[in-house]
Length: 120
Image 1: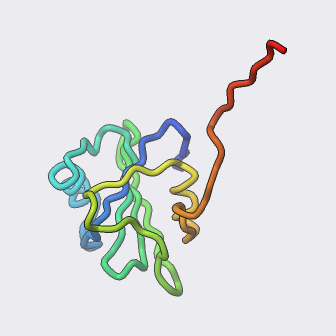
Image 2 (image 1 turned 90 degrees about the vertical axis):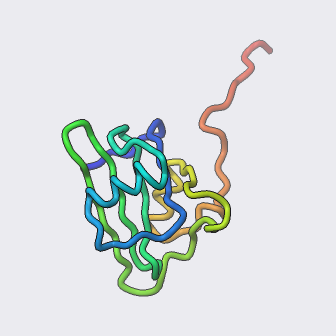
């Protein structure tokens, strides 16, 4: 089981990838296209061309996890614009929304912590 924590670095590959690629092919994209180390523990998110499936790749210190989600109907509604960058950074709550086919761009959340002034 993969535990997603707020401290994890989550990177979303903006351009679609060929889902015939397995772990080695996706790790190669991390290395050569995204210029990232696939052994770093970073969570990498990929989508297929038709926007009907996403893959999550991460290394846990012992081996790779590759998770695949394919929608039974429709497409993933939200994805960053391909013209900006090769990679986009996501927070854990944004990844959770994406996995449930939500739009992380439309959700507003408060800060992770709030400084409280106790001195009256």
